Structures are given as C-alpha cells and as structure tokens.
Length: 275
Image 1: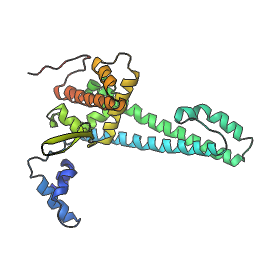
Image 2: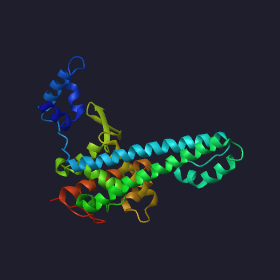
Image 3: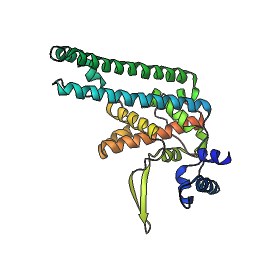
C-alpha cells in the first residue's frame, strides 16, 4: 500500500534512474522507495475526488472530439472520391453536406447514400454528447470559486479554467508561478557544458492537455484581441508568432497560479510589487 501511494505522488521520471536490473515489480518498488528518499524529488500534489471527476469529464470530452474528427475526415474522404470536395473542419462539412448528398443521390445507389447519411448522423450524436459534457463543466464552473477566479483571464475559457484547477490540485504545492510553468513544460529546455548554457525550445514536460489549452488560448488572444497589452505588441514585432504565443501562455499560467495561490481576483493591468 505504501508503494502504491508513492507511485501516485512521485514523478515517474525521478524514479527511472534508480531502477536496477530487468523490469519487474520488485525492482520498480525498490526504485520508488529509493526515489522518495531523495531531497530533490518533488511530490505531485494530491487531487481531491472532485478534481479527479472534473478531469475525467475532460478526458471523455477529448476522446469524443477525436472520434468526431475521425468521422468527419472519413466522411470528407468518401465524398471526395465522388467529386464532392468540401472544406476542412466541421463548419465547412455542415454547410455543404446536404446539397452534396442530394447531388450524389442522383448517381449512387440508395444504400450508399443512406450509409453516408447515417455517418453524418453519428457526427451529430457526438456533437450532442460533447455539448452535454460542456454543459456539466459549465455548471461546475458556476459553483467552483477557484475556477471563477481565473476564468476572467484573457484566453482562459471554460475548458482551461476547469482543467487548470483540477490539474493543479493545490496551488500551494508550487513555490512560485515559475515553478508551475516549469511543471507544465512552458519553459525553455537547457543544455550546456563548460559554463555555457544554451536555451532550446520549450521542455513540453507535464500535462500535455492543459499546456495545449493554454497555448490555444494565447493564440486566440494574439489573433483576435482588439486591445492587446503593450508588451505583447512589442514582443510580436520582435519575435515570431509561435514564440509570442508560448510567452503569453507562460504568463497566463503564472497568472493562474498567482490568483489561486493568493486567492485574488483578476485585475487588468495589475503590476506585482516585490515585498
């Protein structure tokens, strides 16, 4: 029982160096026990059952979105074989599917048209299931104070707010916003020798799902914000778009940690002051 708890609270990457011999439960248990004794190994924050439930909703929604994308791409491919080329994306297919099926019904057997319509119907069913999960997340957002606190941050919507609170667990488990962004993989990788350090691309460690949501939110702010912050405008002029997106996602993650750790509300243009 002790080992199972450690497996859930210790980073797996920190355990790997202590695995000796071939892969076995005994060697894994010994490696976990050795890893938790090390002073530099940081334990992962323990999540509540409610937070785990919210993450389960996110995982199920993510799976349904993958199913829907596969169904749409498959339908587009079948229609293309018969000369009906539709734009990529759900909106493009929805706009032209009815007329395309009507034209094909004059040339193809009825059983094929019926099957294509059934596949389009399955896509509609997936839309309803995804929408129902989002409604449940929205209901939870209205009741959860922490999620409401960070939902006002530009680029943080329903999915990012609920996923951030549930994934983080306890904000006090991180010493600073910098540590939280490093945990999410939104900081540069480093390599160096002889006292010379080179900064590479982002490390991409931690939770891929939350990191992706933050980057998508940051990209939306950069491309659609009517009045972006001055530092974003200056950064966009000096660096490529993707670099600016990651920089903004990093700042969003730090802001999320600060609001949750200090129990504050979002204030546009707020400047932190060191004590």
